[in-house]
Image (cartoon, each protein chain N blue to C red):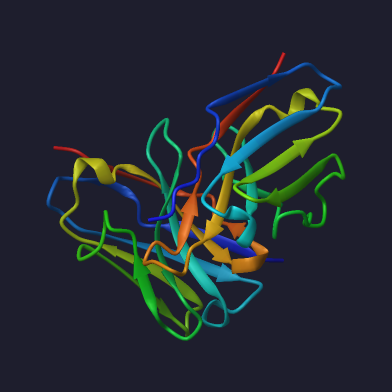
Length: 109
Length: 117
């Protein structure tokens, strides 16, 4: 089955830029989605199809995907961005159609 | 406005059964891919099952043969029948609308399933 690898944690100071990576074999050939989840809440889609933003998501959230790594970039980080972030792809080549990364805890220092 | 409201969670003994429901509004369940995703306490997201708009169904290996996803088009509701429950099935279960290349754009609030004696 397809495996997505994320760093367990990323720390950044307010106003700085956070980059959260998602590694997978030839992930650049897949559409990658990113979700933000705050404690006690359902996940929220923040980037879809590698780099598109749903309505209502700030422009500070952006994504890229190439080769074996996809990246979620959060510019001008705010305290309210502190959350868990998950990457996700569809892997219709196997029975594991929806695959999530293990998640990254973003800490705002 | 799109809404997904889960129900049916609770405490069940190992080996028992439970059926989760997810009532949708603001869109048609049968015209979309619909997934169940779970999250064990303190853990990450785990995909459980998906039903395609055409009716095909798929399951994670961890639940295959024990869980069944279905929908009632007349009620615009998604279901997850869970049998032979194990302690490791303890989690918050989310139903979600899966846009595939557009990502999972709507999630329910989640319902907690606890498997314990």
